Length: 270
Image (tube, rainbow, N blue to C red):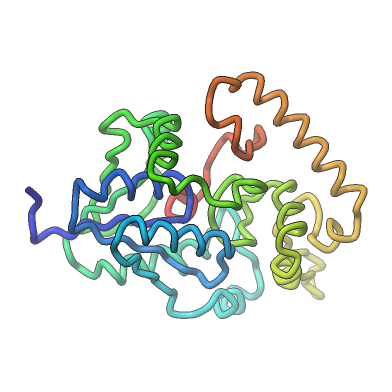
């Protein structure tokens, strides 16, 4: 039995862990509300995956939109792109729409952090009426179990995992260089949109780019660099797969050493 005065809300990112949690909790808490904070800058694969999940759940996934589009906030922040320190995109496009949906209701917010990553209890909301719940941690569910849940449900993995390691906006600053190459190869139009957001301040000469190593324009114009990035990533994947040969992770896009220190925004990337 659940307390009818408490709302139960599961926020989906379009990633494997929150999707597996939604599948896992479907019959355990029938009154669960499912939400997706749609920034307006999502990959088409993410939307397709959520549509597929909605059919399985048999319940609508509430699409929450920010009060203003990304371009409005980019102008508000004087063209300074969001980064790992500021993350204003997460706050304005994800956190605030979620908190507005909850209002002042007492809410159990279900988070897809697994038992093998219990250290990941980062910021989701500071409102005292939003109480995080971690079913996977409590019940010892690990990454291997997540793949099993997705396989048994028939949902599987989102298509973007072929070239990307996480969900989130197409221009997410947490992307690896090889993922930017993947975006160029799979969605050249979105790559160009992301590239158009980059600029150089004419007064200070300071450049605002998504990737600190090089601008997207430089990456797009240098086919040799693209191939080098892919070759380096492929070599890393092969080394990592030797360590993971008996685990299902070996069939999914593998992150680099830098991204193993996952500091990304939980509401975006679970």
